[in-house]
Image (cartoon, rainbow, N blue to C red; front, side):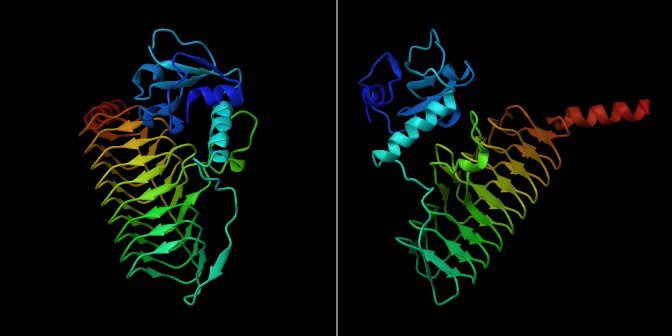
Length: 306
């Protein structure tokens, strides 16, 4: 849609090119050049790929088109997303699908595609508009919400929940009222462990790359982008809007804070807490997410003191 339509319908001011055409709205770090990037920290304005920014205060020197709102920026983002739903460009996942009981004692929503050779266990629920590829193994007691995309040869273990509502909060609205406008996209040859939760994207899709393995009891937040051949071990937690590049390893009970990018082939050791960006091939460990060699030196120094 054109920015001038947003101005006309929602009343937001446009500073720059109102003829700019956009396809969606999402967070700054994962926005493409034809998205509107949600900006809540000024530094994001220059690092995002997007040509159009959504802000609630004037930003100077960006050289980009600005959608200026006079309300909290996430509330304005929700208004734009709702407009895209009304125009048919976004899906509304708050609508509960109708289910049809299948012979294998699982429930299937309308307009759902299940590929040849795919097995679905009893008491599994699959929402409307879901695509599941060929030769997948979906265990019993799995929940796959509406709009999800699952590639070929994907294994989903018992109790996993795919596309749970985004645990995301803005303004005065409770987190569990915000279902999210994004899908969950899972590429080929991915394994998802027992009782793992993958949240739906709030504004953009949550994405799991080809060949990635996810262990038991893992929680993956909204709008997370996980690259190819990553390994995420049991009980790890990844907050919303995180990017893991190809080949990243996140070991048991590690935690990654929101808005973090982890470079390719990096390793996050068990029980580490990552609160800042990680360069490629880096090894991180410890409570404060230090470089692994620095953490070992610190531990050795503490042993001499204690």
